[in-house]
Image 1: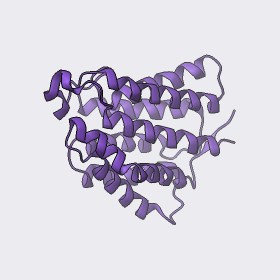
Image 2: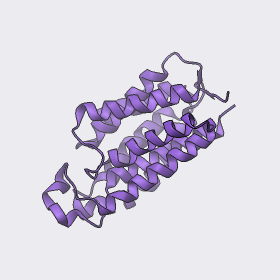
Image 3: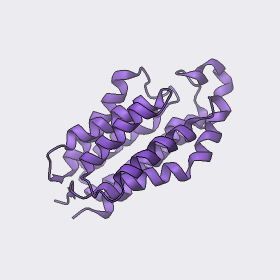
Image 4: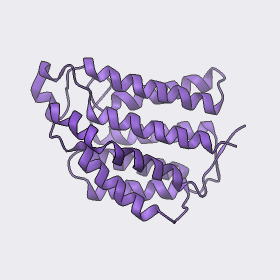
Length: 213
C-alpha cells in the first residue's frame, strides 16, 4: 500500500506557502468585492513567515504543519488566521510521531482539520466560506478510497471536489462574516476563503502524490 513518509517533507508546506504568496493579489481582489480586501495580504504574510522558518530545516510534515499553524494563529488578523491555524495544528497533532502516512491516516488528518475549524466557527456547507471547498474535498477523498481507488487517485478526486466547491460559492449568498451583511449582493462572486482553501488543498495533494512510495 502506498504511503507518504512523514520525515523530511517540509517541501510540501513550502509549496503551499509559495502558492498562497503568488496568489496574494488575486485573493485580495476577490475578497475586496464582498469583504475587507485583505485576505491575500494577510494569508501571504503568515505563509511567508512560516516559509522563512522552514527553509533549510527539512522538517517532518507534522512539524512543518505545527510551525505553520502556530504562526497563522498568532500573526494573522481577522478570522482566517485562527481558522487555518487550528486546521494545520490539528493536521500536525494527527501526524505526530508517525513515520508513514497511509490513506486512512491522511483521511483522519483531514477530518481533524475540518472538525477543528468547525469547533471555532459555525459555518456549514452552503454558507459561502472555506467549508464549501474543504468539506466536499474530504468527502470525495473518503468516497474514492471506499470505492477502491488508489491513494493517488483519491488525492486527485479531493482536488477536483475542492475546486468544484470553490466554484459553487459563486452562486451562494454569504451567511457568515462581513460578506453576510450584503445579502443577495454577495451573489456572483467567489468566496476568498474557499478559493485559498482550494489552492492549499491542491498544493498539499500534489506534494503528497509526488512523495508516495
